[in-house]
Image (cartoon, rainbow, N blue to C red; front, side, top):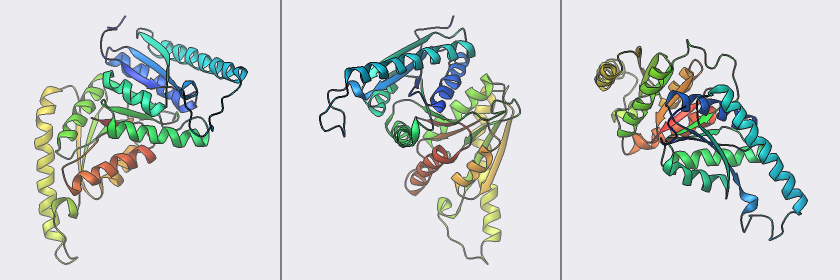
Length: 296
């Protein structure tokens, strides 16, 4: 049995297929990191005030039916977790409040928060999407957003992909990526994308070829330097480097099609680059075909 006093991997459950897939993924992650697993359902209907109800309340019979659904969901989640990682200590529970409020609060004591990319039904999906964004912007722990099951998603030939930009947030992303690759015996692909705005130059078509080659060489050298210490700390991880010209989101989405996980930082190098990396994280959260982990 794993250490139940360690910071838990926390997963939000709303009964949707992706939230159960999140439980499955979170259980494996908890096992790899020797952490307990907490499964939490946020019950907004138990709040003193529920938005858009004009102060009305549902009949008690409806409330009891809803509670029974939640109990079934939590039982199923516990069974899924036990099947995926029987050695992991699993705790399930219901907390009063919106998913955003509950998960942001829980993130203060979690090692990692895991949510599904889509909720129960289209409207709930929009709400869950906003919760994922809120967690990535304001949460106190890393956040993993899990997609619907994809055949072969955990195939051993799929690498962990990490976006590298040389920022402090990028360092946290590298730590998570190397830890994950090492624990899963996976290869690691470190992607560094650069473009004109990042290097602070705008070139005409005639001027572009030679300076671009020089910048490409500089960026390749930067990536190698950033990775040197991590390679020494994780000699068991096979690391591949990719330096490419283009927008980070586009480059990472291309690699995500062949990845088991994409890891990025919440923010990038200050100023405009920071905004670009922030938009990169959001683009990946909405469009990546594989799970995305935003490191904080």
